[in-house]
Length: 368
Image (cartoon, rainbow, N blue to C red; front, side, top):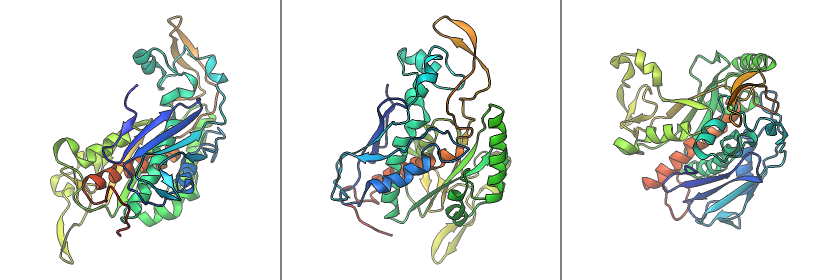
């Protein structure tokens, strides 16, 4: 199975399955001398772990990270950093009865068609638990970017058909996102989101939504024309997250309903610096960062595992059957995807900063 590595200079390779011994990641390309502890990584993992609220799966994993290599005396060595999170609260029994009955909307059928031999327990490699590796790598990327004044933020802007419907300021995101289970920056809207999510969950169903991620203080000049556009790499990174079915940058699909005079961001001089007065481009033009905030949104589909009866095919007997799932599922995945989306955006930007020579690949330094 390929496709387990990402990045060119800041590189990550993830490994492990949902119900196997552990999930882990190897991160290469981190400059030597950057302060890094397990607490730095744990802080981010705690944001994505299950069992945090009534809108997440009750699987009781502590997700404690172990740094196995690449760090000595509290600082990175410039060598590969291997991190491991052991799977503790594993219950594979509900999956034995359905191991030949692919769950609609999940990974089993395409995995079986492609590979033949698969791990059917909890989605195996295709489970949401794989994102532990991304968040751990993203924690390192975030710390590297912060040393250069770059901040990455994320929040839920729509869930279960309830949308924020207005521009949210970064201060609102910093202040409010961790105060509610939906990770929404508007606390009033967050409560309505939660009510709709729980209503669907009580009916044995799930819901989707939209998550927005931003990167602030990104310098101009990241990205390259044609195939290595910055927005193309961001789209790749975000689309690689399970349950993501769409990505938009800046005005995104709204641009299809705008005129050029509305879409184009006017340019002006401020203290001798060229700036754009609006940011419909989402901080990227021609595949290159403009210096404005980078803004991306992802469409998150409803969690495919639901308790409502569904139609499927028993691949052992090749006959149609009804499937009724038992297990521990997220009624809405948006809150837990927020730190994952932040991580993937941070990984892209850390890689791009190294490729552009804006971060020394050999020695860590703070330049704000």
